[in-house]
Image (cartoon, rainbow, N blue to C red):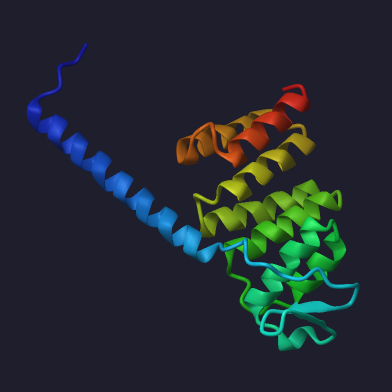
Length: 180
């Protein structure tokens, strides 16, 4: 057993504090970047919700990229995956973690898990602590029969938000159901 000196213990403690402060700062930034609970109307086929009027309109070009992202989330929640992808195609500023996460989710649900993995990985390059993208990436790995990679994502989620957070619970349940 190695005995750690007081100076080394202080250096380790400072490193821990810096890492923790960085994680807290990143989490604050991520939640500011990833708002997903604003109400958006569920519109009929071919229409999009206009956030300024809360009405469904025919012209998606009248809606901002943020409005398109919110509507894509509604389409995903309504299991309208092809519509979500078509709307995501219209986004101009695609260097966004939510864009890639939503694209991965809709693609995976349409039966293309390998393609979805690439989108989830791009989301995580932009936002490494995005636990929802990590959980969905784990589910895509399960579809591809790669349980070790799914469990790796589960461990990472536990490090980020613990075992009681929703992303951890959902992926753990998916792993259990898949029999891994």
